[in-house]
Amino acid sequence: MRPGEELPPLEVPITRTLIVAGAIASRDYQDVHHDAELARAKGSPDIFMNILTTNGLVGRYITDHFGPTAILRKVAIRLGAPNHPGDTMVLTGTVERVEATPEGDTATVGVVGANGVGRHVTGTVTVTVPAGGAA
Amino acid sequence: MGGAERVAEGAGGADAGAEEIPYVELKAFEGRAAAVAGRGKDPVNGPMIRHWCEAMGDANPAYAGPDQVAPPTMLQAWTMGGLSGHEGFSGHEGREGCEGHEEHEGQEGQEGHEGHKGRSDAYDALFALLDGAGYTSVVATDCEQEYVRALRPGDLITFDAVIESVSERKTTRLGTGHFVTTRMDVRADGALAGTHRFRILKYAPAARREPVARRPRPVVNRDNAGFWEGVAAHRLLIQRCCGCGAPRFPWLPGCNACGSAEWDTVEASGEGTVHSYVVMHHPPFPAFDPPYAVGLVELAEGVRIVSNVVGVPCDEVRIGMPVRLEFQRVDEELELPVFRASADGGPHEAR
Image 1 (cartoon, rainbow over the protein chains, first blue to last red):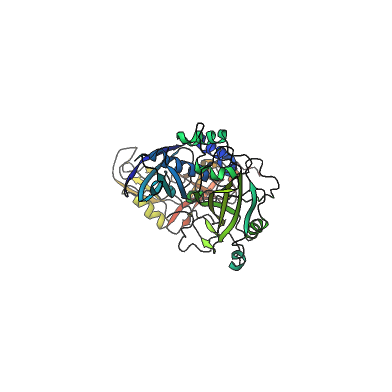
Image 2: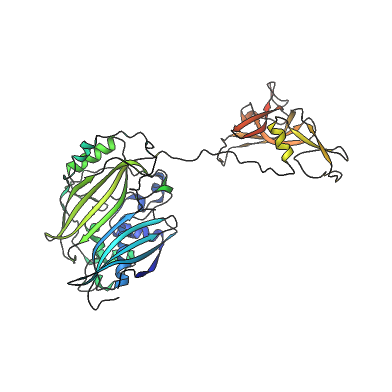
């Protein structure tokens, strides 16, 4: 891997099932993540993805690319436009820096997840790929 | 970067009447505990890892099998109170406002430490202060996690959190409020496993900024321009065929009776009767305020025109009711001909 390298995009269909399954798997029972009626009562057009699911998807995007030996060091995300059912989020990533560290090369990857409304998430992931690992 | 921290220029004062809190009062919370001696409800375990991976569509083999580790991004999940919450939880019922959702720049509902045993009095007091001043809505904006060591099945989770910072009052596109940043240390069997920094915006939703709806504009072309010029001069002009003398309305290039393209105009006297009508209740259209009566008015000159019947409650409009033309200004650039019911009522009105 080298600075400037672009990761292949990952298209994530934002289904109602993904939003609800992600919320429950992250033990987040806030009604706006599973109950459309209550979400609407609070002014949202529909349920929307919780931040823990976004975090999980960003982590998956990085380890899908760098392989099972890759070790996540840091995931920092900022949320923007909400992910509602029926939308599609496309995650893209760019390697910003690569450093040699004792465990292997450590890359800083800028990640953006864009949906139909705008940028759902912008973030930075630090990942170490041991020698012999992917990429 | 985007997000709620992007401060909208010139939008100050758009909040829904939230009071300004002296910043020193908020600043005093910095460094105080947000959660003390919290305990994960479940040890790190395989089933929860599998459920997470299924939801995320994550097939990483490192998260399965006898040597499995938990996905690092699950860090916060191990600290969540879940549906039952943590015992001893003195709940904060944060209202999750979603005003103007199309402008949302963050997501509600992620209070990182909500529901944990040991959630501190200081954190409750900070929320009470913000709620009391009108900053009642919550939006999660940032999550920053650093992973110190992998979590494995059997690890017992404990955590403490500190209020790292409270921002000065910021005006965002969502509304005006304060960013509250907490930092949580998550431990596994007593050893630091990761840190979790979480930022929320506690805000007063901005007043809805829906544009004032305006009536649709008439489509003016060379065939009907004369009509709208007449309206602007408070004259209701009817076309009259130069071939056969038939009056016609609405305006058309040729005569339906004889086919002649030659025409001139006559000005309506303004007298008419309700030939038919409907009362509009639903659906409501922007710039219209139901219920209202729409009449098909037969003018004294023998043509009919569709317009509003005014001056009488819409449920008292009747067929045959005499009406009289007037011009109603609906906004700064549009006037329309409407028909006012005569004071003496119509023939169908029982007296």
